[in-house]
Image (cartoon, rainbow over all chains, first blue to last red; front, side, top):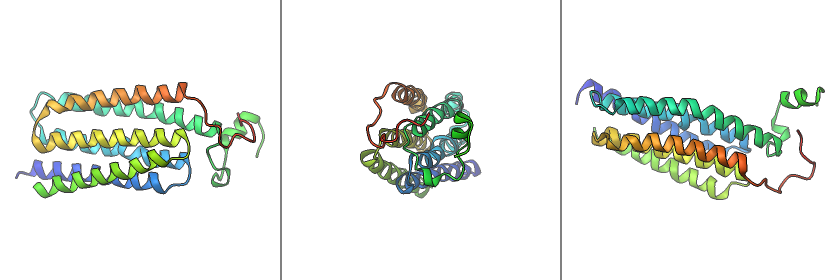
Length: 114
Length: 94
């Protein structure tokens, strides 16, 4: 058991812990936007941690490049999906209005304060 | 060292199970979509954990496939889905 294996284990367990906290948040949070906030953790940071752990453990393998590529795919595609889902959730009023402290999208759209 | 992988596997399995509850119970389609995205991310984490545990890099291509397919699926759902009829009484806001 080398130092690299320990680093890999710590990274993988950290990513898994983020996935677990995100799952708890998805069940506990009240509306779609806060659930999206919670869902971002395993999608980006948790997955990157797990992939970094896998890359450390698979060091020297030819497939480490694919692991780096997966991390880049995740970083590129996650904001697109989050923007689409957030806009749709706002538009269909799944958002609870009393949970918003400031609603800048409405001010921008109508040119008035709510 | 085996303890580490068992801990990671148990946490990922618990995360998948809890997320499954939201995907089945979620009041609107968007909640289910968010839960499905999370479930796919957890599955990708699980595949990565398996690759790190078994030192077998053939499954790594599955992570790339999952990330791209989940992106296409989520964008398609947000683009083409039929809106829910719940909470539409006050009309659309934008």
